[in-house]
Length: 88
Image (cartoon, rainbow, N blue to C red; front, side, top):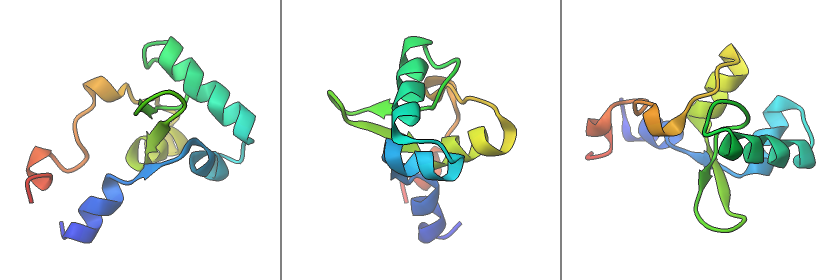
């Protein structure tokens, strides 16, 4: 995979950006993000927390949710292109 593909796969979206392709509102998206955190990653919108109020949604996890309905538990998920892709 070329570097542009790797960057695209690892892109992080804001919760509001993730809401658009799901065709839901901002409040519902944040509620789903909180559900994900409260459930230990078993339901809701997969997010990474970088600090208070700073949630990011991995693009690949959002695509998995949209296309299959499967919620990815990020701490257990393999990386989309393997760890070698991160090393360049």
